Image (tube, rainbow over all chains, first blue to last red; front, side):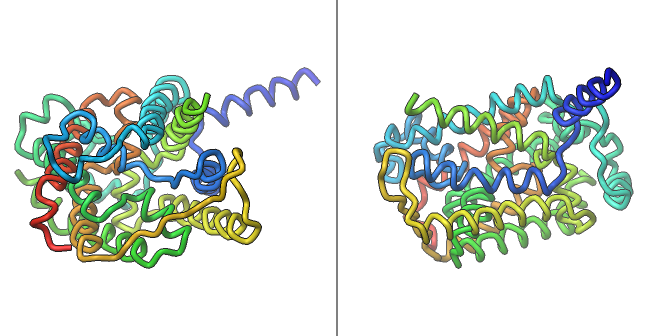
Length: 198
Length: 136
């Protein structure tokens, strides 16, 4: 009896600290769609928050940012909630082991000079100091710019198009998702190896 | 309470993003190299649940908790979907993160993602500034 209780204690702790498999986390992400629709008729999407921050902080008389962003403030709160969720999960529920990525990926990254595979992002690129290197600056600053620019130009991101839009069987979201992937493949296979040589 | 629920839901989503490891730059590399099923599993099962949920909501005319009709907006297809989508994809593979994970990574203590987020904001602002001049 004692043993079983101990076992369940350990087991429930593990559920929180261990990584969650795709068949748990994927459906949970999918559930965001009906929950948001039912609690407030909101369509799941993250990238609009970037637009609302622009509209609230630096509208600069630009027509695109001249709208009632306060009416969309739920999206900003949702984004702020993600930061807090990241904080709690990152500090208290983090799996101490390195993420188990495929051996082929490990080998490919080693060949590109990325040898530390612990944490969520490689320390060779994603640090404050690396911002002062050409490689780090391009990957973080230009990369971030491409995400923010492209997402608005395409009118949605992985959540708004690939999850929400595809769930609603939108053709434009299928096109967007295909081009997200083409961009990602061109970067990963053709441009990224060149950037790593800088 | 009206608006706090979105903060709570965002919190839950942030925890899921971290626990699912989809915030990991390495997982995104794995995905674009077709070397693991993990990311595809997450994305496809999320879409499956989403499709079923939306079909149920439409079929049974489910209302919101305040009794209002649920309306789902359409996204129009234009040249921006293709060009913007491609540019977004480049940035996704460079930073290993789309907007949701950027927020979660910043929260998890990788403060340098604050710089990535700031760059994304500048990107969105630049799009707004030059929107009329871009092909759509």
